[in-house]
Image (cartoon, rainbow, N blue to C red; front, side, top):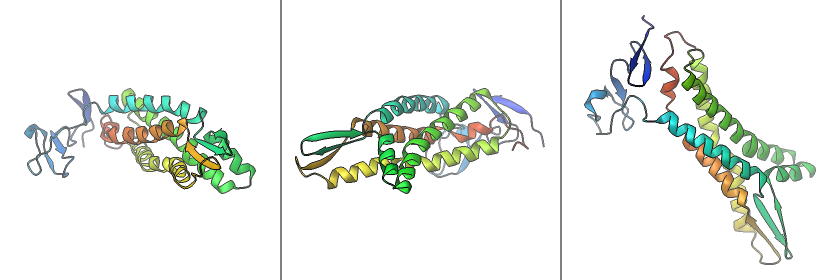
Length: 216
């Protein structure tokens, strides 16, 4: 089978692929139809070979998430008020408190879900965008697997936001004791939501546009 590449618009598609033949899956119902129709004959959704400005949108969201990641880890995520005295803790300080008290499981869960996963997701998405721009033709299957894992695990980073929300709702005893969200809570939620959207906007088909038939 031929493995040459041809150019269509701004992208390059593997010869004998659906895209090269002008066919596209409808994002509404999944029906494969000629893209020249403009609209899906089944559900009426717009047809396009690739999501418009997918790479640019994803890159912009990654940069936004990277900027938000800084205050999310530098500022207090939770502020404890007890007998008129307030004390704030960052995510890492909270992890250190749990570890110092022997709650290793909770500390490690928060460390992984709230620090390592968002950072890993940012790096993975940035690397995938860079590889797509670079046009590498090796390891497309592994890149797709990385994309799927990145897309699946992102939501679990919200665990820290959920913990803060529950504590804020349950512990409100006036001047005696109360817990309020810190400025980092908003930034951290922004990081998680932005990276989730970034994973959704990245068209994984772009990974394969320069791949050969036997590319793994």
